[in-house]
Length: 251
Length: 78
Length: 184
Image 1 (cartoon, chains in turn green, blue, purple):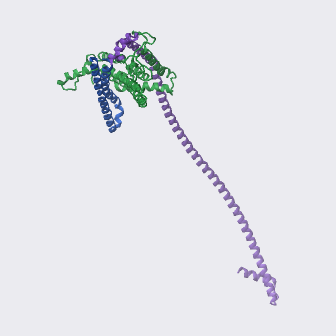
Image 2 (cartoon, rainbow over the protein chains, first blue to last red; image 1 turned 180 degrees about the vertical axis):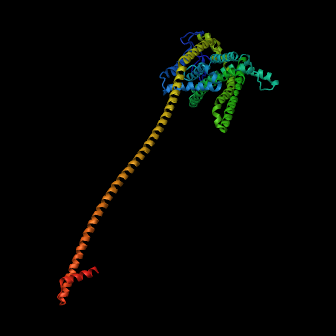
């Protein structure tokens, strides 16, 4: 069911997962770690679009911004305010990293919505790398900044003494579940939406229900546009929250 | 025959896991509804709490996504 | 379903299938993981370099410039407002000055006119006095001459009356008598 070369035209044929297959770009079968694949292509497009928006769009440096420049400024202000509000002013030196994450995810999500596109953020390998990078850097940062005091994050001093060990275990587990939920949330949302659209699109082959199916695809697409942004926002804001925990573990 | 029964199990399991998506929908609805009722009582404080709203929605939704993932795994991966 | 897929893959014995042998979910095809991670890291590093070297400083600069020019403009507006206030004050001052000046000029003019008027009145008074003195003199003259005439007329009349009565009247005596009577 998952492979591409299925017998076409054999009635209803659902291949909802085919869109996620990683293929080498220039023929060949094996995917080595260096092979340029469709992952490479769409990541390159993501980088290009970010470059166009944030560098080419702002080349005028106009005081009264053009349309593209005001979008770039909007993105800048959005993430900047998020970091400042959630993490605090002292975290603004990590702003470029968080901005990198946000721009990459939001553009991967949006570009993945283009027909025939490949959604890089729908792969657990990608999102897990992102989430692990956040998890490891936040943990290391926490220990570097606070030393052993960082462990106070797990020792809830406001709880009754008898409860504290139990709470510590729970906190520890929830701390290590963070990268899992962080990555699976993004990947699951992206993959689920695209797969559902694909399933609805598969129903369009039947003439009777094809109008319903087209309507459903349209509705799902609208929802997906929303989800694409919200998931990028959520990923970024959770990164900010984790960063705040690392910088100020006392509360 | 044996494969058929295994497949049957997979499909039933996937369907059961799909219930989780609906459950998470209830959760997300609770989060959003409670936020709205709080926001209507004190609209001035609402603007500062949208980040918390989205975090709450994300946590509630993540569990639904997990169950959806389980369904997909049962359908395609096992 | 998945067994289907593997069977199909094996059955087809396609080179591609045999090579990739993708499980149902391409996300769980571990052979593609190093590739994705590798390209992801490259993409992230490139984005980070673009952002931190070019984009973010530039946007921050633009925003700071805008903030600065807004502050400048506000300060300038404040200054202009102050200037406008000063100008208004100066205008009011000038207006008051002009009014005082006008008042002065009016008072001066009034004074001059008054002086002229007084002069004229004086002159007129003097003229009138002179004229009235003259006319008094004339009147007096007329009265005197009239009196004289009256005496003459009285003498003549008396003389006539006396002669009419049949007396031979002495002109001197009649004149004396009339004069006595007139003196009363």
